[in-house]
Length: 396
Image 1 (tube, rainbow, N blue to C red):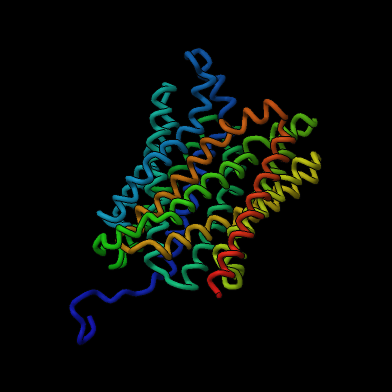
Image 2 (image 1 turned 120 degrees about the horizontal axis):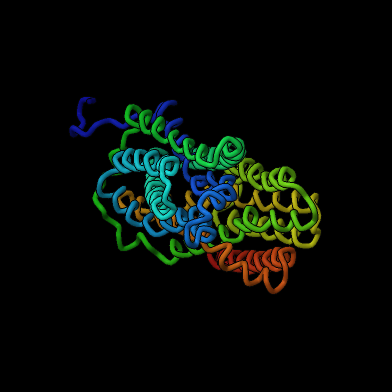
C-alpha cells in the first residue's frame, strides 16, 4: 500500500499468465456447441432404438446455444453481484463436468440435459471474460485486447473442429474429452485472475445502463449471427449438392473462420481510424457482400471468397460491439449489459437454421444467400445514410 492512500489496494496491470488465461477461456465459448458436430451421424446410429433419436441427436447440438441465450442475463447478474473471478471459476468447473459427461452417458435424454447445463457454463464463462476485459483495460488497450480475444475465439474453431473430427473417427464419445481443457484453464485462473476493484463497484448508473442504443446492439448481434451461421449450417448442403466431398466442404467453411481471425487482428487498427458506427456499417456491408457473392456465383471458388469476405465482417463486428458496450456500461452493471450481447449471439446461432429454412424451402440454398446478402447491403446503406445525416447535424 502506498503512503497517503485510503487503504484501497493498488491495481496492477494483468501479467502474461493472467492475459493468457482469459484468452484461453475465450477459446472455450463460441465453439462449445459445435465440438460434437462430427459425432452426430454416429450418435444417431447408436441411439437409433430410442424414440425420436433423430431429432434429439440434433438437439444435442443446438440446445447448448439456446440455454446460453436464456441464462446469460443471470450470469451477468452474478458477475456484478458476486464478482467476475468467482463466476469464471465456477463456470469453468461446470463446463468441464457437464461437457465431459457426454462420454459416460448412455441415455439420450440425460445427454441432452448435460448439453443444456453446458450452455449455462458457457454463458458464465463468456460473460465473465467480457466483463473482466472491460474492467482490466481502458482506451486503446481495451480495443487491442478485444481484437486479440476475437482472434483466439476464431482460431479455436479452426483447431477444435478438425481435431473433434479426427477424434470422432476413434469413437463418437471421444470428442467429449476436449471439454476437460476447461479444468486446466480453471486451475490457471485460480492463480492468475483477480477482480479489479471497479468490478465490485456499487450498481450505480442503472438508469442509463440499458438505453435504446444498447438494445440496438443486442438486436444487431442477433441478426448478424443469424446471417453468419448460414455458413456452417447451409454451405455444406450447397456444396454437397454440387458433388463436392466433405474434405473440400470443410476447407471452404474454414475460409470464414480464417477471415474472422484476420478481422480480429485488424480490428485495433481499423477502430483507431473509424468510429464505432462506421465500423458497424462496414461489418454489415462486408457480410452482405460476402453472402451475395456466395449466392450469385454458386461455385466453390465464389463460395470460398464470399465466406472470406463475410468472415472479415464478423471478425470486426464482435469486438466492435463488445467495445461499444464496455465503453457505455457503468462499472457496476458491466456484467449485465455485456450478458445481453452473449444472449444475442447465441440466440442467433439457435434461430438461424429455424428461420432460414422456410426461405430455403421456397427459393433454394443459393438464392437464400443472395437475398440475405441483398437485405444486409440495403441495411448497411440505410444505416450509412442515417449515420452521415446524424454526423452532419451534430457538426452544425
